[in-house]
Structure formats: C-alpha cells, structure tokens
View: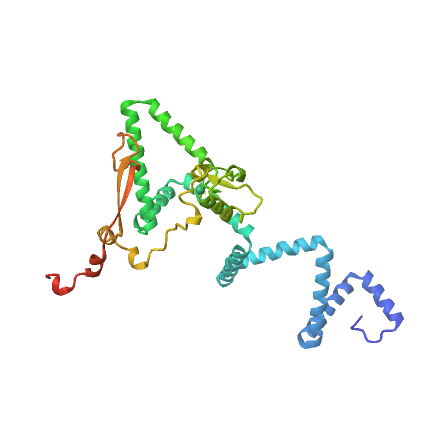
Length: 350
Ligand SMILES: [Zn+2]
C-alpha cells in the first residue's frame, strides 16, 4: 500500500484480512483511497504525469491483448466520432476537406484507384441516365447546348461530315423505298464488307521502294532475286542497292504493286524515295490564301477531267469524285501579278 507508511507485518496482515472479509470496510477504504488519489492527482504535477503514463501503458497493453476490449473501444470511438461529425460543424468541415484531399491525392497517384473510380462514376451516371427520366432529359439538353455553342474548327468539321453522311444515308434509304432494289443494297453492303475486310489490318505495310504506308492488298512480299536478273539496267540496280541493301532487318519486306510492275519491266519506278520527290513545307504567308489568291499566284495550273464515281443515284455534290484521262499542268507566269499586288492606294481608284 502506498498510503500506509511503514506498516508492521502483523498489522498489514490484519488489514488485508479485514479488507477481504468486511464489505463495509472495503468500500470505505476504496472511497478513502480514491479521494486521496484524486486529491494528489489534482495537486501534485508529478503524480499526475505518472498516473497518466501508467494508465496509458495499461490501456495500450489491454488494447493489444484483449480483442473484446479492442472491439469495444473501436465501436465506441466510431460512435463518438460520428456524433461529433453530426453535432460539430467545424469538425465536419475539417473531416470533409481532409478526405477530399486524400481522395484527390489517391486519384492522381494511384492509377488502379483512378480507373476503378472512373468506371464506378460511369456506371452511376449511366444508371441515373436510364432510370431517372428528368435527369436524362436534362443531360440531353446540356449536351445539345454544348454542341451548339462549341464553335471550334474540329467540331464544325465533324458536324459537317455528320450532316453529309446523314444526307447520303437518307438518299440511300429513299432509293430503297422507292425502287425497292434489294440488289442495290446488297451490292452496297457487300462492297462495304469487302472494304472493311481489306482495311481491317490498317495501312501497316511500307513499300520498300517508295516508302508509302499501304494496305495488305496493295503490296506483295519483296524477293530480291525476282528483280536482279541479268542484263538489268544499271540505274535500277543502283536503285535496288541504295534502297534495299541498307535495310538489313530480318523482318518481312514489302513492295507495292506499282513499283514491282515497273521494275519487272526494267524501268525505274515513278515515285521511289531515291527520286527525292517530296512535298515541301508551305511558307506561312501562303498558308492562308483564299481561292482567288491561290489561282492568281499558282505557278502551275492543272487541267483535268473530273467525273462522279457513283452513278446518277446521288446528287453530284455529294458523290465521290475521280479524275479521268490525262492531267495537264500548264506553267503560268505570275511574276507580274505577284509584284503588282496589292494595288497601291493611288491606283486603286478609291
Ligand atoms: Zn512503292
């Protein structure tokens, strides 16, 4: 006992016995000790600190060893925090900002979490969209508004393309309705299927002679022995050596049909890289010319016959165009025009 100073062993025994057997005495003693400890706790700083650290250690140990106690403490602290959250608005705001910051940090650093969050938001929005009619209408209205107010070049272009496609589809459906030519639609669908099959792989095949990226049906595998026959023109041999021997990679090499045919006929292909034909960069002052200015300053005027590729079912404005026959490039002398424009103020009669 801390409270009894130098107790003799006999009186100690007596005291312990009395404490064990006499309930009233025990209660009294407990009260006395409690009041003494609380008095000491409030007056002596040292004792207070000691008691605090002791009780801390005691609780830590209990928390660690006793799972029942641990669970109880957890539920209690949960309830306390919840109560605090609902009653104390300051605390609530603090918790909210903190959790916001944590989630933002997690969103930006943890890609897994980000993807999950996105997917969850998407499903939630979709669910809302499909279940709540008023929200659906609102979302549609918002999207329409943003579509109509967005005036960037890309959206304008895509809008134009969309409208054009819609017009063409309408024409096609009209044709089907009026003439009911099943053959026509099946032909269209067949052609489309064929085209889709061809472009399935994408233009991943690079011609070894002209370096164009082409689709699979436009190229054939390149076998060098086919082209290096005897009596070959030295020019072509040089072309083959320059272009093809450098390319020593082990992967399959391809050549386009056009280059292949020309080289089989012992002619140099028209558009290989060794011809150094390339489109040069347009200077900035020529980039933004209108049609009239382009015609006035063009060094070559091309003349060609343009035809509609589809038959007369579609209006000529919408159908795909192609050239037919020879193309003439007429050089034009624009030196005078270029040097006199813009007209000086005194000669413009304004
Ligand atoms: Zn080629």
